[in-house]
Length: 73
Image (cartoon, rainbow, N blue to C red; front, side, top):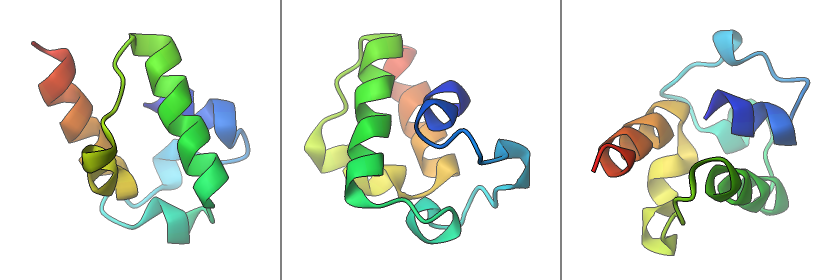
């Protein structure tokens, strides 16, 4: 997830993120940036994030939890 975030927003320091805060608000992600992160996840992992899971990706912690669950299978 860090690699994908950095690919879209290289100026963001992942260590400085509040993992429970909305990434859209905290690092000013717009909808295009969000979709770019989803595309980067697909590119790096082969996992196609379903649209119904997008709300989980509002926070860094939610995104990591979702990916951990679905990539472990």
